[in-house]
Length: 584
Image (cartoon, rainbow, N blue to C red):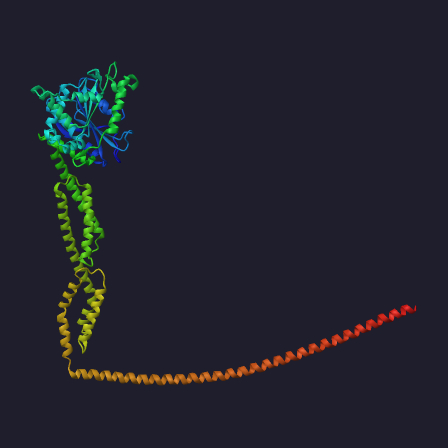
């Protein structure tokens, strides 16, 4: 199942209301949400032949599409079920179960052809469900529908023999899967056993006879073979010899093994061999594209004109390419809005950005476009992008002019205020005014993001102020010599006063230096006296320390003498005792 799409049950895609085809909007909303390419499997056949049963099997269930057991047709219109079977989880299958053909309750027999044609036009795998055998009636019915649809631009005419057209058929038209229900014949021809596919090929093989009867026999077969270059056949036995009114409720164990096996083979073939739905040019059809095809075909059929493929593709191309142009323009607007910082310093900078975003927009268009014949819509896109470029150039000019005007007001505003206050209405004022102008011009040039109107806007501003400059110049020249002399006198008086103040300051500084020198001299004298006192004190301490040392040395010498005398006295005493002991 495509992301975000969940269909627990089938829905009616195209309703049959009073023999008119009406598209169900709920079904279209489901299709519009499927962005991945689709495999579209449609089944068509006589009513009450078990079409819905097979489609339920493809959906992996016994219930879903309505399965009836009476003589009355159950399925009305075309029902749709989008599934992602576990046998092919990477694909979204759109299963289309159609209203049974040949219902006796129908008022308009042409309605059958409309349903049949729609199934052919919408499908990538077309399942033709018949009963008992492949007979002339089934062949004629299939052929008649191809005739009703004009064989999709006469694809079955004689020029289809060319290799290129045949290749286009194989790449675009649906594969035919012919089912024969309740088949009862022996698969044998000329004493040789046949496969189901060989049986189909034999049934569609034209006669070699060129008579009138052979032409009538061969025409539908040739048409079918060219309309469906790829074909497959499945032959179903009777499901069971029991009452089949409740076929959908019967377990496989109660059905004939051959029938169950064929159903399994049929489902496996559909899942593994069905191709994606494509349009000419190998355009893969997704949900929105299929939605557009449904609307195109139904509108054409209801208007009385069965659609040819070219008109359908052109209508689809108109819708898809218009949307692609809008998408590309939206991308261009978004990217330019984010990246264009107006004003740009140069026009080339804006043009380079436009070309880069233009390439992105064209890439967006090419990714979403569909069969843009003669590049009609791409040229329309390029025309719109060219207009967008011109619009951005005009916006760039306007933004630059506004930015520069604001800068000039900010930078030159104080100068204009000084002019109004008469700051430059004095001798030499014009020269200072011109110098100020040049300084402010440099300040203006250094400001960033002025854009391509920077110089032009500045020159226009300076030209508008030329009269002011002339007025200041005339005022400068009209000052009298006396006024100049007075000005010079004032300057000299000011200079004399400044010189007097300078001399006074020099004298004051000299006095301060003399006072400082005297203070330093007195400090030196005091320091010298203090140093002398400190030296005397140090000498006194050293003499006292020397006297104390000598006294300590004398005391030490006396102690040593006493100790020596004491030692000698002890020695004499010991000797006396020794002699005394001897005489005893």
